[in-house]
Length: 469
Length: 110
Ligand SMILES: Cc1cc2nc3c(=O)[nH]c(=O)nc-3n(C[C@H](O)[C@H](O)[C@H](O)COP(=O)(O)OP(=O)(O)OC[C@H]3O[C@@H](n4cnc5c(N)ncnc54)[C@H](O)[C@@H]3O)c2cc1C
Ligand code: FES
Image (cartoon, rainbow over all chains, first blue to last red):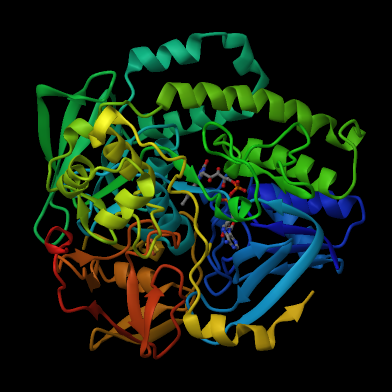
């Protein structure tokens, strides 16, 4: 039996694996990608060597030190292309092989302790025209720049909310694109209120501030326009993006009449925050907190014994917070103690960075009137192509205010992505249109029985090849 | 060219000579680089759409880039529903576009 099983090899998972190995435990590290590194350290494959890949990254030497130590370590088994699709009764079910391939190898792992480090993905709010080719999530554009050296467009608009828009714009410039502008929905006055409250707290996180200062300098050097209180409220084009409407919005993100301009662009990158990948912890019975991240205590323990969580599934806070949480989770999962010397640094950093993260969250939270930029024809569920009008009419005419039944009637969130892209927006729109202005059941769009797609044939025959580890 | 591969001579990372591969995409030969995903190959050729949606027959390509949204599905060597952003291109791959017969729109569904 494996001693510590880590799911996800981003900053949090790598740090967890290293910490568990430092206590001498046998570790298995699983990741669906072909290479370790997660979103932050997404890099070119070995078939595409480069002289100075580090220029695309922050903390590249730390990444190399961690990943190489684990790769050389005979008591750490790294399994990439390992798609964890289910968890039941403490057993972790994995398909190993090409993404969406047929004939992958089915494996089942049982472990004394499990660390979830599955990260998060971009949230993009629905906007008229956001389903046109040439619209990407901000992270998608970033992943294509770092992992493929693809520039998603020549004239690119970056819009949404949060500090993550800055590295995305920098990467686009490094890839040779012209960034038409970065449009931050939050207002400057609101941002300033959050940032200047209790400034001494920021002193605890100098690395974070330096990273932000670096992006700011790239923006100044490349003359990238940065505007606050602005949002992309419509995207236009026939077969692909041709232009976008940028609107002035109020503090609730309601477009201000007369505040629109249309600019030419061939690509748009949208990022309105992140959604955690919580389906595996939910399947394991772990509780979510009020913000719908995995609830953890000071030990990075979830509500279920022997299951730990670290990184952006527990809250959005950037790479350093993920690393600190990963170190603590790995150490605790390996049987260590919170008071151990080895954790002193990581604990101090985690606590400082958490308050930084809360500040960011308050500064960049989604304004409640964003739905004002929708029209009845706007697609909300991209997979099943369910429009705003359809959602509202189902909610208004149905006598039910239960999310489950409204989803079944409208089919929103029931397509290939299982509501990952639209789920939370669907909830908002349905709740506003439902009698009484809210949904009555406790259900959310987070629950998914299968965490990653598998083919029916694999389900049927998978057990024959299943290996117990 | 709008979506494209960063030109090697201008790329600050100083890429070393790549291994070129040839694929068939929608019936045409397309050059790629070993190690790219199928989405990477297609975007490098400024192909931004490679699927039509089932209900409204609208063009789609990559959106999330990390395997979450399922917008980027293609048929590879006869196998349907492969996420182009997750599958590495292999020399000689035959990539076809998903073109479903448009079904009724959700509004028309019972
Ligand atoms: C696309 C994208 C790009 C980003 N780029 C940057 C950036 O350039 N700069 C920045 O400051 N922040 C970036 N971020 C924010 C970033 O998420 C964090 O800074 C950091 O990477 C979080 O670390 P983590 O370890 O929590 O999760 P991640 O780095 O997200 O790692 C999670 C890992 O879990 C794996 N995984 C998930 N589900 C499964 C499963 N079912 N089976 C197997 N493996 C699974 C994933 O493949 C992934 O490798 C990006 C976010 C996204 C979504
Ligand atoms: S682009 Fe989203 S799954 Fe491939």
